[in-house]
Amino acid sequence: MRIAVVDKERCQPKKCGQECLKYCPKVRSGDETVVIAEKAVISEKLCVGCGICIKKCPMKAIQIVGLPERLEGREVHRYGVNGFVLYNLPVPRSGAVVGILGANGTGKSTAVRILSGQLKPNLGKEEADWEEIFERFSGTELLDYLKKLRDGKIRASIKPQYIETIPKAFRGKTRELLEKFDERSILDEAVEKLNLKASLNREVGDLSGGELQRVAI
Ligand code: SF4
Ligand code: SF4
Image 1 (tube, protein in one colour):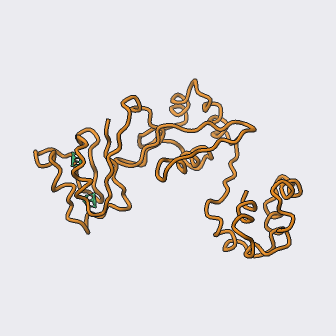
Image 2 (cartoon, helix red, strand yellow):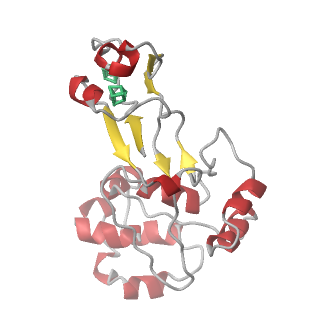
């Protein structure tokens, strides 16, 4: 199965010659494989994945992605028609570190947003309720996790990805910053484990990238 994905940020129908519409052989033969609304919309059902529109689009806004057939109906989250689709989730394990590796745009941030409760998965539809979500994950290790997430029994703490924003958001010494967020009174233990003793009395703005990474953790 090949599905067309339009990058909505890049697609600029008012600035291009709408080449995707003009050159699509399916549109030329009279169907509605490509429709231009605010952005280009490519029908996953009608598109035959010939790739012509990819070559013609001046904004490089189209990608055809090949997917194994069995993933159909297994969507976890979809960002609208022709939008990015996430088909599975990693399983967090108590007391263990789970790493997610993948190229840009493969859904790592979406997975983290779902697992942290910031984004409710829509199962590829406009919206899904929790019962449908539990049904989708029944018999998997994630079911219990998602139930706890829904019930507020799991709280996520997210380390900022762009550490250079920390000194812009907080002016003062490292100790003051860490004390401010020490909800569990584990400052001494965390400082020891992350080797931050020497950084405690320094200004956050003077810390190195490595120190900022450890402060962010
Ligand atoms: S996909 Fe490309 S060619 Fe089609 S409307 Fe968007 S920018 Fe234009
Ligand atoms: S891949 Fe081919 S069939 Fe599909 S939208 Fe592009 S030009 Fe049309």
